Image (cartoon, rainbow, N blue to C red; front, side, top):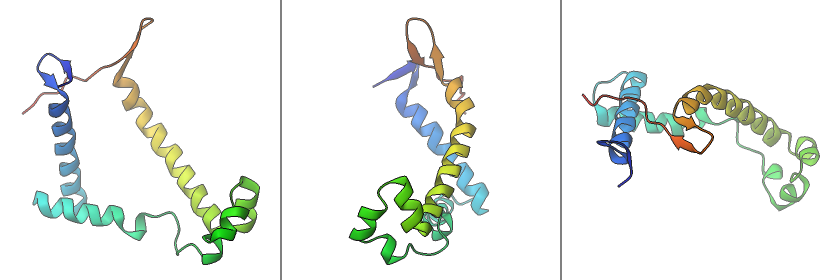
Amino acid sequence: MTRFRAGFTYDLFVSLILSQVVQIAKEVMGTNDSDVAVSLFRKKLNSTDSFFNDAPIPKNESNKEAHKRCSNLTGAEKYCPKRWAAMQLWFREARRVSMFCLDTLLECVSYTPEAVKPRVPNITNG
């Protein structure tokens, strides 16, 4: 079992993260029932509202011919405009999330001349 600090195990770290995710699901879904909140939250995350295209990608942008014509940036933009637009939205969101997470990620890593090591914040259990 991996130990981050004395008494702080990987399993404990995962359980703390999961408990935070359940709490977020409760808040977002507006219920205090953990099972209901997680179920509804999963449905929300998997719904087409969370996708980056407002309609299904057309067949001509998803078939074998599209795979050939749209496999580079120029062809994708020209021959697969719906797929291209969805991809651009995804890129924009990925950059936004990356920047949002960067500060947190940097807090979890300790940089020294000798090594890069994980640093677990002081988290109390209780």
